[in-house]
Image 1: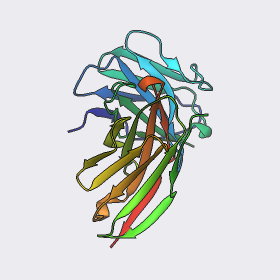
Image 2: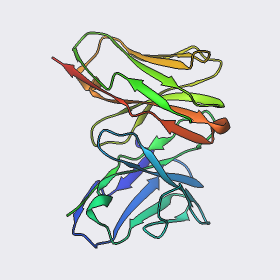
Image 3: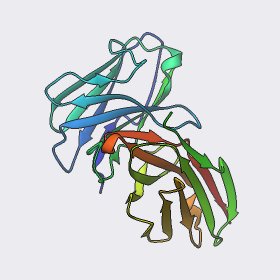
Image 4: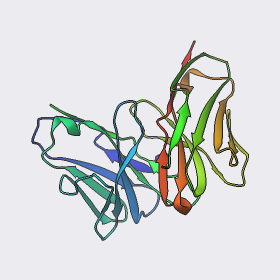
Amino acid sequence: GAVVSQHPSRVICKSGTSVKIECRSLDFQATTMFWYRQFPKQSLMLMATSNEGSKATYEQGVEKDKFLINHASLTLSTLTVTSAHPEDSSFYICSVGHRGGNQPQHFGDGTRLSIL
Amino acid sequence: KNQVEQSPQSLIILEGKNCTLQCNYTVSPFSNLRWYKQDTGRGPVSLTIMTFSENTKSNGRYTATLDADTKQSSLHITASQLSDSASYICVVSEEYGNKLVFGAGTILRVKS
């Protein structure tokens, strides 16, 4: 069964809207979750590492005020795209599991965000 | 610069045939190499994960190989099925496993 649940699967909204995406770890408590963005025919790009109970760590070039991450519990992390614009349209994917070590990360099914 | 390059970009094969996908990397220090399958509009699903000391690992009809000396890996799919149509992503872990470097993927289409 699914290890990671991501919701919603698809969002279409007007420019200027803020959109919240949820990522839930179903099988285990995740102190760390990861948020990726994927443009068509490109590889996944890590946006930020979500840390339970503390601030997220953002990758270079990712605006933390634009992409708000909250990891309030060991099973839930949320990504809010604030004042979204058409260039924010993308496929957003979360994952849980150890970034290091020899265990695979488990990915959610992604959220297709389309900003009109 | 740490990079992962995959080839071919895309591939079309007939159902029942075998195929091999390639992955070359320049990631150092190397921790492990992973192959994922990503169906259209879905998240990636792990197929195999190999450490430095492993040369080959199988998962059903999927067999991955790793040559750490030449920094090359391959994913061999045997007796392909229509459901194998997907993007296959090679991911290499660097910095003792603390950072993942993603390849752009190979898009495989299996035709009947």
